Image (cartoon, rainbow, N blue to C red; front, side, top):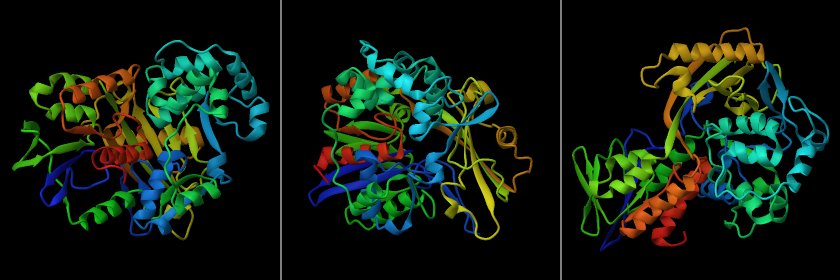
Length: 462
């Protein structure tokens, strides 16, 4: 998401200038709305409502007047209960409910309860950080690390669990072991103070009705569109699109933001652009800070939206993930028609799917994202649907998107890089606040919460 927020403080009060490099707001939240009523998502398609970050997002949805637009998916919905893995050429339903805990469910060779009981007895780790794979293998066994956690990291981060940091990617589980010596005991007994966000009526409703995720009737792009409309109605807010930032220089106690056709002065900057993009525009005097920011890697993901005539799925559920041992190129397939049938066209039944590819393996499998033929990605996606789901028909509609550098990768030692970054900002008294997916969470909820925290660090609690 390429957005700059620049805050100027004038004698008339606080003045906020929002600079967006592209021709639309919302970053990776992007929806296609066809005239026949069909909605396709080219980025995040569902948001989890749980925890402080989930409630914070729902509070914003309510403040923007979008309650009637929300499409909830409750816990008892088939998309919540049925999630699959494609392993050794077959679809396997992930264990769910008590039955899945007590009995052996393929592709696993023993009941999950055995791994849980073993985990409680494993000694607390001493390392200050650990890869996600190493952590799970140590506490729960190699099988869960190689299959389940490998898939989870590919689905959430499009990343390699053998490189990602447990401390930064899954802090609640890391902290649970630190506090209680066990992730199971830590999750049951708690690990200390948590961020508190007072819930709106919408957030309370999500809790009462046990939502597992939600979307919006006209797609997730509705959220940034509503936020843009709200900001443009604010007296002391300026909103600008198609304004890429070319460079930053210190100007007195503030900044001069260089643009293609001029400059903007600001007392303080909130940067929500990717870390490496920020590094490229910082002044030479901030060379050390730029180096730390460049160490935060990103990966690219190819998304292929497919629409088929009729109900062609052999199973119903949210979708399936694919471990790297099965197919490095293919991350998973989302069965969009199941959780959000409201996004399908009215009338005759149809099936919407999204195939996710690449991630940490993008260049290894496809080469550089620039100039990659859409037909190659489309062919790869349709072959996967045929092999995994037995779909022999050709899609009646398709859309290929390559999201370049879309997901930051919190590799081992990410927390140290963040510490060095924040130390540099504080040591040099830079009027700069960092927000966005590069730092403390890659989900929609994490990014929105980081923006709120950034604003509150300047103006106090909102």
